[in-house]
Structures are given as C-alpha cells and as structure tokens.
Length: 211
View 1 (cartoon, one colour):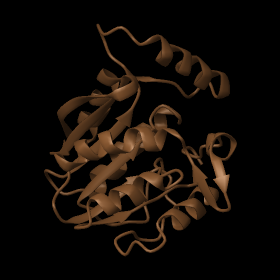
View 2 (cartoon, one colour; view 1 turned 90 degrees about the horizontal axis):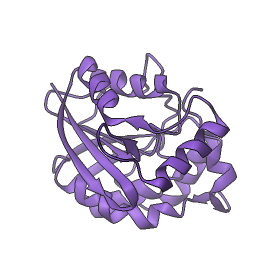
View 3 (cartoon, one colour; view 1 turned 180 degrees about the horizontal axis):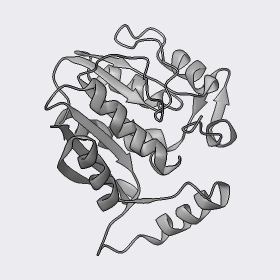
View 4 (tube, one colour; view 1 turned 120 degrees about the horizontal axis):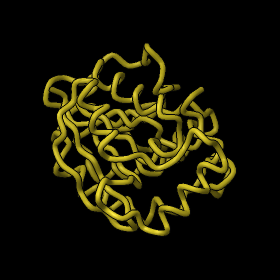
C-alpha cells in the first residue's frame, strides 16, 4: 500500500496494542487550535493516516460535538487507534483506507484532517489524498494538513534538512514537499487555499476548502 508507514512500528513506543509517537504530546494542542478555527461545529471528520491514534483520541475529547472517523492502511496502527479511543463514543472504528485508492471506504465527510503523512509517503499519496477528499467533501468543507514543508524564498531549518535526508535514506520517494507544489495539486483536485499557519518546531498547517 502506498501510504503504509513502517516507521510506526519501528520508531513508536509500544504498550500492548497502543503505539506512542512522542511528538504527539508536543504538537496536539497547537494542531487543535488550528482545527478550532477550521472545522465545523458538528459533523463527521475523516482523519487520513491516523497512525497511532493519539491525535484522534485527543481531538475527540477536545471537540465532542464532532464524530471522528480515523483510518490507516497499517493493521498495527488500526489496533493502536482502537486502544487509544476506547470509551470515546464519538470515535468510529478505524477504516482500512489507502489514500491512493480510487475507491475510499467512506462515502461522505464534513471535514478531513491529515497529520504527518505527506512527507512520509510517495507523492502519489498526496495526489490521492486530494482526489479522495474531493470525492467525499461538500463545497466549502475543510481539508487540514500538518507537517514540515519547504517553501519558496523561505530558508529550510537545518533540523528539517536533516529530517528530509533521513527520510530519503529510508525511501527515496519520501521527503519534505514544497508548499507551492502541494497547493498546486490541491487546486488541480478542486480545492482552494485558505491559509497557512506557522506551527512550533518548524512545522506548518495548511488549510484548504473544497470549491
């Protein structure tokens, strides 16, 4: 599967089925602030490439008026998502969803969130993300991305350069993407660019709206 991420099992700490990505505790509040200003007050939010499931569980508590639909192509990730979301009535069972697939196992959502997938997957996964989100989101619905990116005329932080090199050493198809290329792909798929939000640790959030 194009979006399968072997780093999850290799790098995340594990407690039974639960995986723990240390960065989650550092960035979840900042991401939640972006989501507060981007997501609808009610409806269904699809998270593509949910990974360990920690973000989804946290956001489900922060936004109880929303129903959260996590997803991941990795069965170990889906088991972790189930473990982290235990007891949360507004989190659905995780879907086996590959971003590049032409047919996603969900017909409609009111918003879509994707955290730290774009740089840890081939470019085709990003194109698939926009194509799939365009199929299921209504006009005006948000698609929110988070992660490290390159930007034209903005120097890339040394830590991000090192991260990019490490990613490419694992898989030559991975690596930091240019915001400008991501915006162009989004526009080609039927999304308008809403805003870029500067985030801690040299990351950014990108908010798009379905046209």
